[in-house]
Length: 274
Image (tube, rainbow, N blue to C red; front, side, top):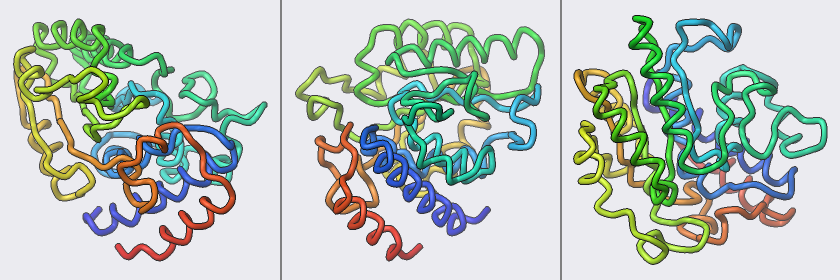
């Protein structure tokens, strides 16, 4: 796909995020919106996947370590054809397969249940090691929040992955600078993020604008060509990206839009040019 086509897909992913959280009257739109481009690039361009065969043995794996941004993952899965887009309106409803956090036993396309912050990268590293041990070709991708990397388990997994030279593992850090309690620098600063990943023997790729498709493409191409060590892509993004009144507002970390906000957000998205 061209960057322009991917931008159009990311716009649809954003609409799905708003549809889902509005219908649920709960959920996490802010960090889902900041990662809309990377979700889109992974599922429409980067990964070897087949929505008609979600469990195919040689598929690339994705682990949403920051599992609270499930609305973003669900939206890209729906738009990619794993299940109907209409299902997004059932987010967090009783009986729906779209739980508040991803569940691999209920939702097609979900490779790992997640939500307890810090644990997803361990799961992803285990998957990557398994591929190495069995001489499988699949790659493993995991998305972490910048607040999430304050968790100690993240660095235990990083130490393991770097030591094992898991070059089939790509860690993506959504560096939007905000977590539930405020700016990450004020809560418990994980900076310097880039230097930390380098210290754990990762090849680090910095993306100045993680909401720009061309820069995302270049980063994943570089990661794919990196041998002998895992890659960490650190992306500067905007929390709430794409909706003016949500951008860089920490209050939208875990708050759903009401009817008026929903209409305003959808109007903005419907009038966005790509």
